[in-house]
Amino acid sequence: MDFLNNLFGKKHPVATTSNKEIPAVIFNPITSEAVVKAGTLLFKCPTCSNKVSVTMRQIDPIIGVSVVCTRCKNISHVPGIYKTEPKPAGMSITGSIRVPITKFPNLYFEHPLIQSLIKSGQSDLLFDYGLWAFCGACYHQFPARVLWAFSIADRAGGFVFNAQTPDSARDMNALRDGHCSHCQHQNLIVVVTEIPDYVRNVIASKSK
Image 1 (cartoon, rainbow, N blue to C red):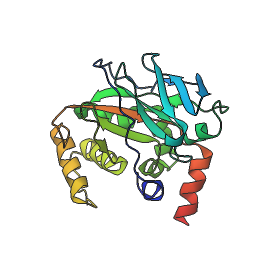
Image 2 (image 1 turned 30 degrees about the vertical axis):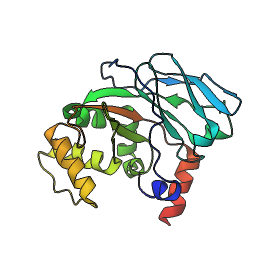
Image 3 (image 1 turned 180 degrees about the vertical axis):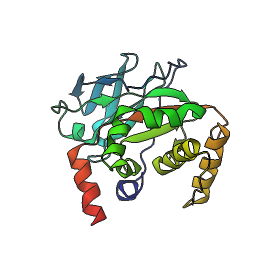
Image 4 (image 1 turned 90 degrees about the horizontal axis):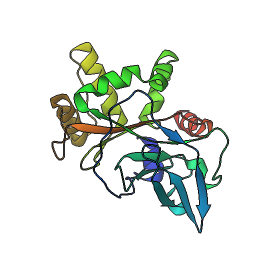
């Protein structure tokens, strides 16, 4: 993420563990089964239904938090609204899907939520919220802008990426080579979510 990370700090997944991979599918699994007890949000992992917990103080009110399941090692994104509303109407906790890095551009252009944003000319919102991808082994997080550039380059057969930082350049080169820039692993854990209105409003206010 770009300015939202600058505002609130980068949110690393809240770590926990297991060794099960699932096939990549086009829809991210979701759950709305959540409850707050003693300052902790408890919910069912959208992938394996294992009980997952995260303290309320770890949930940022805007960008939310990413949490790793102890059983399946997949990542779920908890929207920021859960900090104040444990059962918000129309808002779900979104699970991840695993995909080989070489197949990520296909997922990018075929995922219905991303397709909708592209068609409406709003895909740049994903630079700040709605698209997260982590290494399937070390959980290194790849910036959404780099993921976009990687997908465009793959579809176009070539693309000049003006990296903003050395880390972004390293990530881009590694993705094009089909592996993580930190550990050489070849799979991504990907979360794609709806972009809530309260997030859209923050993004809009900062672009004025």
